[in-house]
Image (cartoon, rainbow, N blue to C red; front, side, top):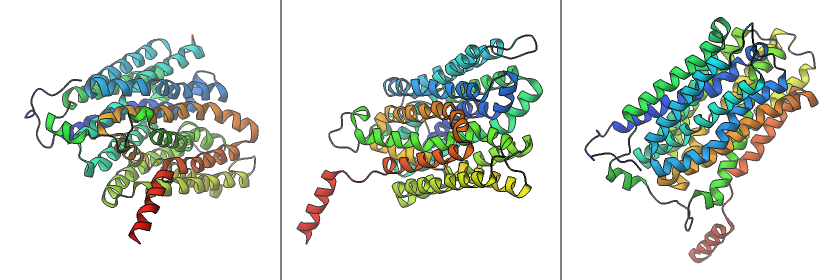
Length: 432
């Protein structure tokens, strides 16, 4: 692992620079991963794809991240945050430049699915470096009373990047083409790498020793052998399914079923991302003060169940012809936006809970496990939606999203283990 040269090298406020670099890295990652799907309608036309092929190529980014998150997390715990972030962001920029050169549709040539899908898969494989490394850096630089806020601020980078992507990328693609799109994303990755080069370092020895506490599970030899870490990681992945449904096919839903124009679609997706940013910062600070992360996660899951079930019911009531009135169109947009914000608001809290359970010294591995689950779902969600559409249409899509949120609830907030319950009963009987 690479350490700082001197414990006096950094001011007491340097942790905020580390946070800023983590946000910059995650914004660059998120603009690519969450922004490219915002161009789904244009991509479907430009590359001449049907919905099934579109879902596959968009899902390949998530598959690449899912395949690489755990190896990147293990390397982060071994090498440190700085080299992993620099290696990942730098190579991601190179991959995007290669796509700008060889995977752009034009009048003379439309690249096959192999070029597009392979390029997006590679972007995902390399981009998987960002999540665990930036999260571990915050766990080692911030004390326990600030971690929820710091992790939630870092997690705002995901909707911030998605909002930038929703606002900028469709315009860039429409007016300047896919080469400009991939080139812009490569530039953002290079800027994120520069911020990490300047500010991300291992903390001084004293802080590192004080924050690298052992896992909170007695006898656990590491996150990979801890069943509770695996359960929370699985719950995080499941609750991301409805979020990815909104992010990957929300634009298609609003265009095809909601009959919304490009301006309305862009405004809706930007609102989802901005709302998620605000809620993530608020929830991190609020749960730090109240120490009620499990209760907050339970509430987010339950509300997501209700909102997506309501969206399914509204679509079912609208019938097969789509939103043929202004009032119905407004209702669909509002409910989709509310659902997207709610199901995106909990990430910082869940990741803090998971990293705290694993211990700061092993946070890279634990976050890699969670992100493996998240981006496996990121692959499966856009891949599955076209098949659900062919089976029963949009009502089934949103009903399945609601079911995923319902299944995530007991995994994110598990009941106490039997041994813990027995010990509690024993203590109660002794006290009486």
